[in-house]
Length: 250
Image (cartoon, rainbow, N blue to C red):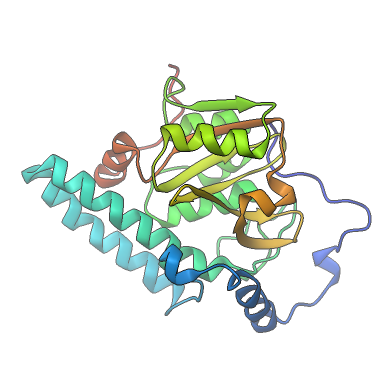
């Protein structure tokens, strides 16, 4: 697995096109609004200033660190819910419509382009994880998963129909945010009420989108590697204590 898929010869070259950023964002919001935001309990529209969002998360982490010293279980459970909400409702909405490019590595939504691996690593870093976004983005899908979870806990599936994959995933996972590595792509999978949603910087749509995984041409793969994010207690602990994420040898 090698990060994002290369762009086809007939695809748009974003370096040659001037974008109306507001128009792009509005068009993307219209597209994703086909999903039921109320049912998903996910906000699609960006709120406030992005740097303010990031700084607020940094400030909030001190609360969870103090709580962890008093009640570890309560701190992890609370931080897990906080991380889920902050990523999907505060960080990601600013990224919808950001142009995809195979070499994109912008650190600011809708200013420049973003490759699939950089979308994941950058949003995780902005969520407050202590990681090198360049190294994670450039890693193969399995290595990216190993940065998040020990290989013994990572789930790997191959040569399955979507229905088979969906059933297997729902047999081991609950509602939450998951990292997924594909043949030539990476992104997030959101599980909500047994449905799978694919959140990624799409080389199919040339921008950051969220869509039903079953309907996404970018989600087709021979191999799927899953690692837990919001449901991963060890990872949540690392977030609270600001521990450096590194690939586990086990």
